[in-house]
Length: 115
Image 1 (cartoon, one colour):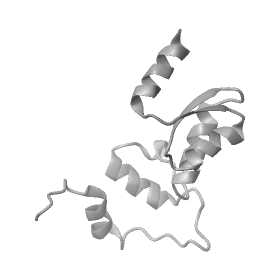
Image 2 (image 1 turned 120 degrees about the horizontal axis):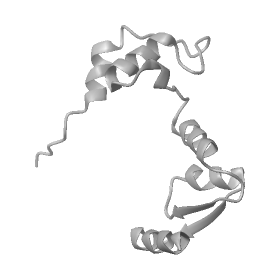
Image 3 (image 1 turned 90 degrees about the horizontal axis):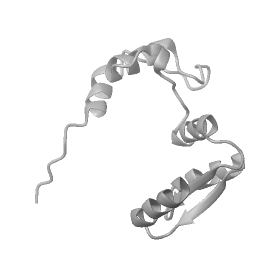
Image 4 (image 1 turned 90 degrees about the vertical axis):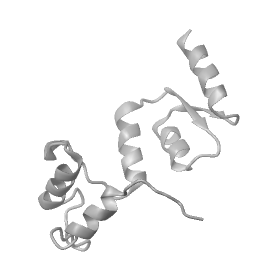
């Protein structure tokens, strides 16, 4: 059995550029060096001023939630879920509505919130 996967551009970019971008985790910038931001900018096509380097998915998810959510907001969370996606909004003070039945329930809940 052969599986065909689409080209994984990031992997090829890392293999081609790993010597160009050095990042010292002990003394490096927590928000990414200018060289790293420039490299990600070149890869993504976004300007370096629009690149934010985070220390993993949880930090990135937290920053997005902190920017978009406020205390008392209603947040729809489907289960099962990567747990920080449910706990971060709760930590901000949002009300989580847990949905166990998938996208059909999300669609119904969105219609209810819109009316």
